[in-house]
Length: 310
Image 1: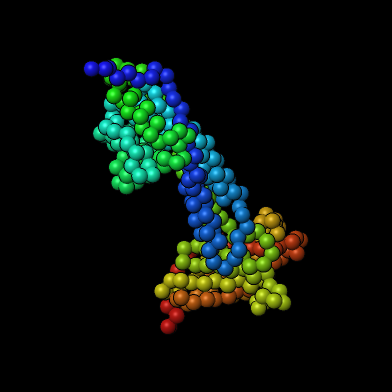
Image 2: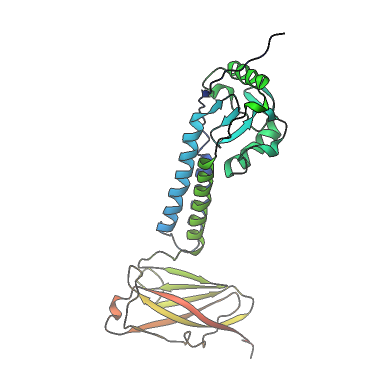
């Protein structure tokens, strides 16, 4: 009986993975769609959203670069560089060509090293359910013929002994890509939810709970008198908010030494906004730099429910 021996050296098998950057791009498209759907105004691209987008692209680029390395067949086991997953031959039950895939089947999926990181956490269960193994590359994208990949892997698996396992590769790169991806989504999502409306002349929209504030500087085509504040109430009860105003210039910087007065007392809790309705107040600016005011930041200092039937 001839003893099976495996090559003592590693073998690199490149792989053309066109989907490596797909996840960050899909996430970025969804976040951009959410930003575009914010009502009442067309937001500018904030620096926070831009930073998140850069992190997402960086995450996808690093994953794509690792994916191009494909696989390494070593005396110890098989490494999938896209997610830096290492599978010792002791955990591999079979490497087979199945249709247009090469499937690496394992005995214990829980023992997959670093499959818990973002990419491996989603791709390995999908491969297992659909193809029968957590690693299932497309045969035509391998850098060598599928039959040659299977033959080499099976020869190494058959010759493997537990004493041959020297070290297990670290997965810092996959962890780094996951961290960048999560940080990018968090930054961009924060920008979508909490970013201020565009700092420019024209309609400015702000929210506080169930109240929405629209400041209209006014103009011939706006349909509003100059310096109009529109308050929309989405509550089922009438609300009288007490507001504070910070006058700002065209770049969103506070304008000092300017006092904001109201015509109907929204700064003193005197203006009641009907349930599911709208109320308006007129603002006036006084001070040496009153002409520099282009927008107003609204802060709710308090609010109370009122009965409009009395």
